[in-house]
Image 1 (cartoon, helix red, strand yellow):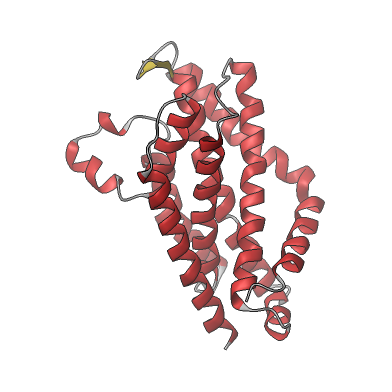
Image 2 (cartoon, rainbow, N blue to C red; image 1 turned 120 degrees about the horizontal axis):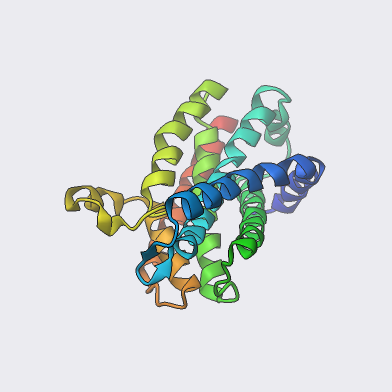
Length: 246
């Protein structure tokens, strides 16, 4: 069923290696600006739930960056489909839809975790040193990137142009980036806003990643929810890829 995924993953890694000199600075610039602007200029010496604001901010940036970088695989797929017609070659190859989705998702997860390492490095000059050796932290980042990578592959099969892709990002990714508990605790929002935000996957990712880095107890629920959502998106993506191949 999943035969052939390694070849596709290997191809994506070769493409990413060629783009790495440009990719690394692009992954670093936004977190660095957020740390300077929000962590110092706006956050100052404020504390959030007993932690400095820069300590609170960095886990949120990790959650947001894994989401954005994992979802970015959709743009790569669309470039391959619309301009280089590589997807047509996959259609002709003896690779199942599930193998195609798995290869793309793993490539997106790998890309997302490069950004995690970059943000951790950025945090050191700002005095941020958290429990990065906690397995629950890495479990949270993997599940978060898995959710949005699977969503990205599925949506990439629906869009018809880059304009459609930008619209989906504006409606799905940008709101979550700012309202998913990345920059401020949701408890500071009115109750009628908090409830809908608990439906966002990034809200639970931010909670789990932040708690694990603070050596707290995230609980079992965020991980279970992310796993179920990710599997659901993965299955839907397989169906949409199969429909696009027909």
